[in-house]
Length: 306
Image 1: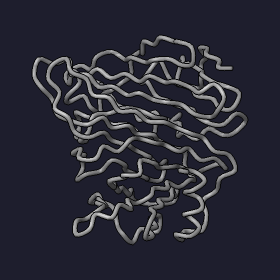
Image 2: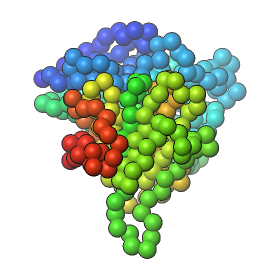
Image 3: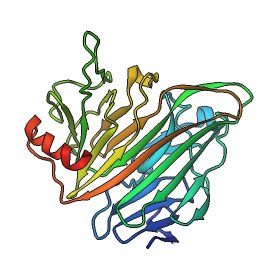
């Protein structure tokens, strides 16, 4: 049975608590919105919580005096490609929400300056640890805009992202694009690449950030931590033009957290038009990162991705 109720959580203010007999999710509505908590019943939170507000940016140059963007942690929706300060909208206002049997939809105010209207609809399965997230970005400006829906899940420290590489036989043409950011090093000890998989571990002692992206045609990715795995699935759109050199999945990590990110193809939105990006999340219990070989990771992939 699915339960939906308002609660207050730490210093995140009012949140909506949605649960079934197997999993629980907490979504902020005084700020954000953020999915600030997601875990199996009785297990630790898989999401990073920036209770100390350690990760923030001054965005007053674009959004007004004393405006600050906070990561807060958890899962959020952005517009790609990234730019500063325009991407870092200070979403510190109250969020409207409406409930329905099995979930809720969250709609923050239209963003000042950018004219972006975002929304997230959360639907929970009744009898399994699974949710469906429908993310929307609407252009409320009079002029057109370009971009992609970008969904960032900021995960708790101590785990590892696990992403399959494309395996399609494309003959004389390439089948994968591995994209690295300027501050990322192929020799980074947190990064493991095999013939079929990518693993990026979070390390609280790491001095530098790391980020990569890939055209994840399989659509699956996972973050493994605290004896659980959070698996994301998105439908890869063949022929779509993806941002950041063709990336549909990206992984970012620093000394505080790790991000497991998915992206839609790029669209041009006329005034009033909307683009949609859907993720399905599944939680698995009793999962640990295994030996980083194709054989061992292949068995893990079969368990998590089917």
